Amino acid sequence: MKKLVAANWKMNGEGSWSTKPAALASLLGDNMPENVQVLFCPPAVYLDRIATEAGKFGMNAGAQNCHASASGAFTGEISAQMAADCGADYVICGHSERRALFGETDAVVRAKADAVIAAGLSAIICVGETLAYRESGEAEATVEMQLKGSIPTTSTALNTVIAYEPVWAIGTGKTATLDDIEQMHGHIRKVYGQLLGDKSAGKLRIQYGGSVKPANAKEILSAKGVDGALVGGASLKMEDFAKIILAG
Ligand code: 13P
Image 1 (cartoon, rainbow, N blue to C red):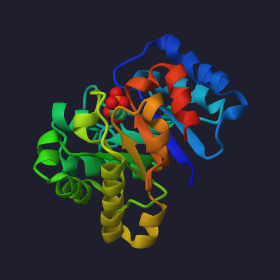
Image 2: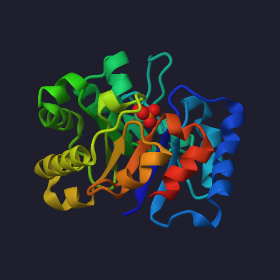
Image 3: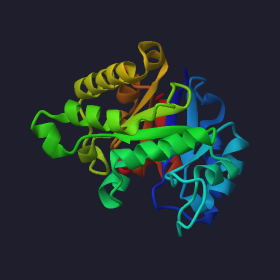
Image 4: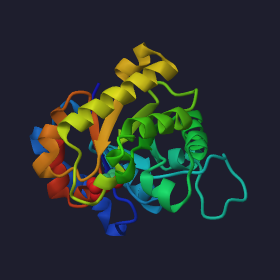
């Protein structure tokens, strides 16, 4: 099971960034770790060209979001199948920014993940507690509720990745302690096992996200139960992203 180190560019980038996979490949050179799978999730309008470029170097591409429906009158949206047509292998579902800024509920996230899986892609389902829930000791309960509401019955360890991203760690420079990360990843695996069986849970990849940087990547990616990282800010500069991949 390779670690999945993913770049979530959010709403950043421009057409000229299609050279980034090549730039990353040249930074990695012969040192690309065998046990790491690299994924670029650019804004949807760049997905096609990033997927083409990433594919040249054995890297994958994914969308940051999609609509749950296959087609229809949903101005401005894209379907999972459209992402697949552009070369995506993954779609991020229920990122905390989508949940907080675009009102995505667990039910919406589940419907999107279901659509992603139906299109033959893998869903990266994001969960994570706010600071208020962390401080009130309800982090695990919050994440458990999100998992139970967001994971579709069609999920398997092959078509699903869970990304644990504590909301308070995103873009803040704060990271959860290793103990907290390991404990939460263990909890996520346990809950996934309750939902879809322990055998599946054993193979499930669980990424950590939230201020992953070159300086902390090694310890985070080596932590128990951490099968990759979902990287925001530090994935915009290939020098930084390469260092994170090399830590994998
Ligand atoms: P940062 O790495 O910028 O904290 O963002 C994390 C994130 O939201 C990735 O999806």
